[in-house]
Image 1 (tube, rainbow, N blue to C red):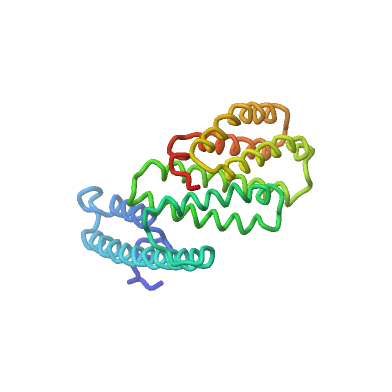
Image 2: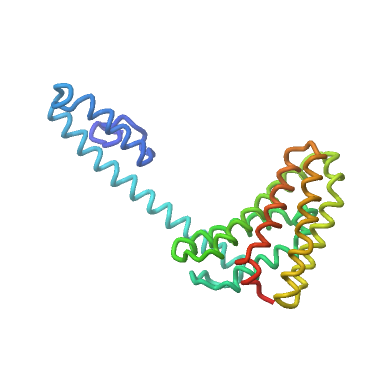
Length: 248
């Protein structure tokens, strides 16, 4: 960097963030400002000019990176869902994705080869929901966001578990997992609102008790986290905003 380079003047790297630029500016101003330490007015003016130039450059880089990130999101969205991304409040879209996740829950638990797909699939959906929540503040979006986050956690825990040597707790949880899969299959097989509501509430309490017992008997931290996320899903599925918007 040359002596005229704003980053050189501020004594920071060219790839510095906006926050680092502000920090360097504050430190140099305190050191050189004539009204504070009797410093050099010319040096202070140089620092101020360098600060504005560095901020302009850093902000421009942030904007470019944001646009690149957005472009990548649009490409991935179209690749996964076979349609262009359109930011609209369509409950059917969100709940159809959740329905697919419940249908595929056995694969999420046991199919190591599919976990990378579900990981990226959920990452894109979570970004989609975040964009929706910025413009639409309906409560059902908060429910969907929390559901997708818990599915994401389960996928990450399963990737961690299945990629290594299986802990004995993996086998201790088989009965609990079988009951959860049955629960999801019952939900997705519901033909109307009353059947869905009945399925959710008739199985909820026994499943929560089952999960708590499992947590008390296993030692693996990752397996415990998996069960905690499953418990969160069971609780979220009993929220009024969830089954009121379910599509049959």
